[in-house]
Length: 317
Ligand SMILES: NC(=O)c1ccc[n+]([C@@H]2O[C@H](COP(=O)([O-])OP(=O)(O)OC[C@H]3O[C@@H](n4cnc5c(N)ncnc54)[C@H](O)[C@@H]3O)[C@@H](O)[C@H]2O)c1
Image 1 (cartoon, protein in one colour):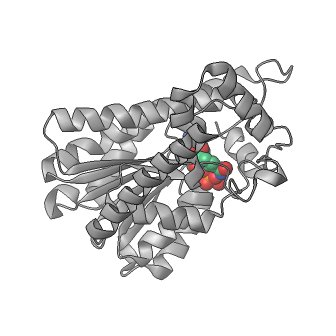
Image 2 (tube, helix red, strand yellow; image 1 turned 180 degrees about the vertical axis):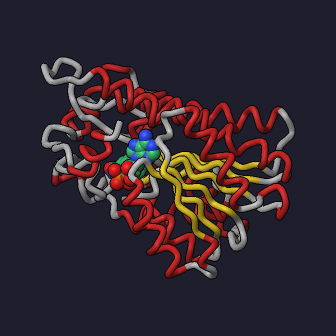
């Protein structure tokens, strides 16, 4: 118990420090160009609306053309100028399509000419939620999950990083997951892809630092379950929900926008999640697995149901 209290205290000091530093360092986003992948629904859609209201130009990408055009309309109603918002139909797991949409985005917004500061929000993601031993486990879907949530980060980021370097500034935000910090039963392929996303962000930050690009920032976002419909039915048991609730999408987006303004390198939600890497690193595995089983983390996917939006994305993949 004493160890747990000490760890909670350390996490509190760390988190409080981040908040204090961040509060002092908040910057305006007005005039930047933000590219959002998976902008057609959920977090991507809400981020587009929040950033449009902040005076940010938007390049909205999604595999679902109708959905992203609808979000484009909503964002234009909030934007400072109509031409500040453009939509692009792009499957980010298709390297050639990403290269093409990337070049088109840079040219449409005349990024080289105007010298706009870029903000890339790697947000698109998919989930299957099937156990490896499930007779309906879909190998093609698992491979696609790795591509969309993991490897596509490389193509999409490469499409915009040279422009950030040329401008001497930029910010790459990667929406990973708490499933990128811990393992969860029933989410093997998803967790593997989100661990890849966390590793991608960590290495990118190191690489940018080592190469002297001090004004290109990175933020990795690791939320637990969010009520967007992607993880319908999943969540912690009721007795854990006061400390680990299913997060409201509006709250998640508000925290992400704050983290971008403050250039926070890491954002974990809910706050209890900051303990996750600490516990994994300090507890013996057998004890760690026991904590996950007794708190309900290991059974959090038991009531998961695949939603229409995910099946919709699936049919286009
Ligand atoms: N919802 C949660 O509980 C939760 C928790 C932690 C992390 N996340 C992550 O947050 C991100 C957003 O999730 P959400 O809840 O808003 O999901 P969502 O399903 O509402 O939105 C995902 C969007 O990505 C798009 N998309 C899917 N495949 C694509 C592809 N190949 N190319 C381009 N676009 C594609 C979909 O069309 C959809 O518009 C995802 O990366 C997800 O893994 C979600």
